[in-house]
Length: 172
Image (cartoon, rainbow, N blue to C red):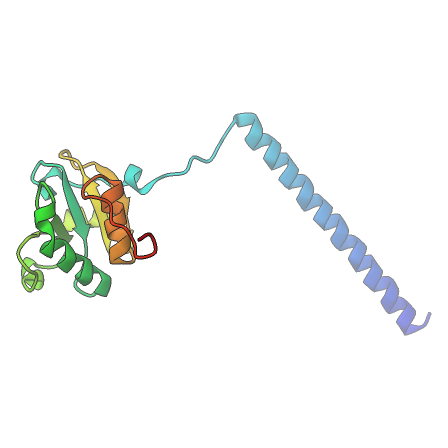
């Protein structure tokens, strides 16, 4: 038998073997799918507000806006300055939650209560700062956002009914 003929036979045998393997994998997937459907398992989406809870001491036992931030984050700095300068718009002073010392934020204008709490920070450490939260008196998080601009922060505050809605230049 010529070498090229043997090579073609071997190649087609390998292709047929791969098809049988693929059929076996698809059969296993079909069996697994039927088992999952039989048990009625369903994936339930988890919201960050379902998993984040802060100690009540962070908000002083009152419903407050909390910004979780660190000094190495430029957006955190910008949002902290904005909230500090506009703190009078809120019923309660906003809280800046950090793992750093309070003195790291002493350059901020007055208006934010800076809380350094490692335990509370661990509750939001898996999220990328800045994290803005509306926290209830018991520490449960009612609303959560990770804004990427001041406009997004203002829109969130308006949606949470903390400040009047802000109109963008395109809406004017």
